[in-house]
Image 1 (spheres, rainbow, N blue to C red):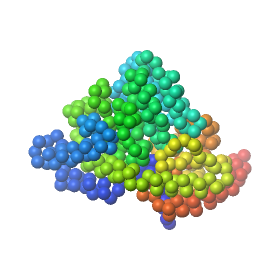
Image 2 (cartoon, rainbow, N blue to C red):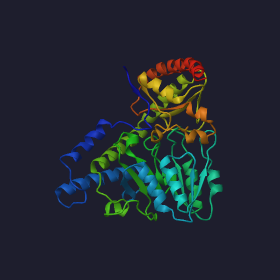
Image 3 (cartoon, rainbow, N blue to C red):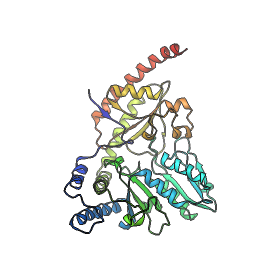
Image 4 (cartoon, helix red, strand yellow):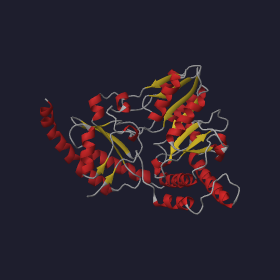
Length: 385
């Protein structure tokens, strides 16, 4: 049976080039990057090369790149490291749980938190951010691209608002990294976090931009690693992996790959929308090239996910971090969908390596699965009655 993976926003496979770059640092070049002997020097050089690549990726100084374990640690570092009781924190109701749960924790510790909701198309209105600002607003955190809908937020406008109000600005760029032209100076942020495994790098490693002079406390303390902003022996192989993944992501943004993936996504979307009772969540808003979130009326999304998987097509009902949850998507609910519509929505997110054959396979399987499940729905309803 042919299998087609369309859940890239959950994770992506290592590209062969990334694997080959990492391989020596598991075996031959195993040194601790803090050691001063030959083995340590090999590791240190590899970390330094990766940091140089990430500085180019972010558009910042090498000293402003901090390696960590991924997007969750980056978001937690920004929030826990910047806020104190009495501060005011602005974020949105459609953020990843790494931001939302951290915000709730800070609220318990005496930080005032304001969650700004989106428009129906999933976009955050910058003026709503501006209206939420108070004299004690210390931090604003807004994601670059939503993990469920792919909607790209107007972060440059929000960055200007934050600068005008003297608030610090953090961007969760986990889903946008490698999919859009990236430049933290243009974004206007002081903090930005990314994760390797969302752009064909290894799991368990990420990077964070921390603008020089930003007064942030480390989440982890101990040794003097990462300029005392992230204690712990460096994951050299992982750092090499994110460096290579970032290098290849910059190439794909420049070489037309993003346009090719956009065309595939659009063809997939257009084909699925020929099925009666379907609609795109986030339609009309700018989105990442690889993502479409589609609602299938009169269906339970989980049943459709299983039906598609049995036919070899892997998709998602939303964030992989909420897999197994019976609650509907908080993102789609914030956009105005009711519970049944939110539960009837699926996310299709294409790999950078997706092909026309992948799209053709999905367009063969999806309509058949939808038709079959809708035909069974009245029978199931009668059985339950």
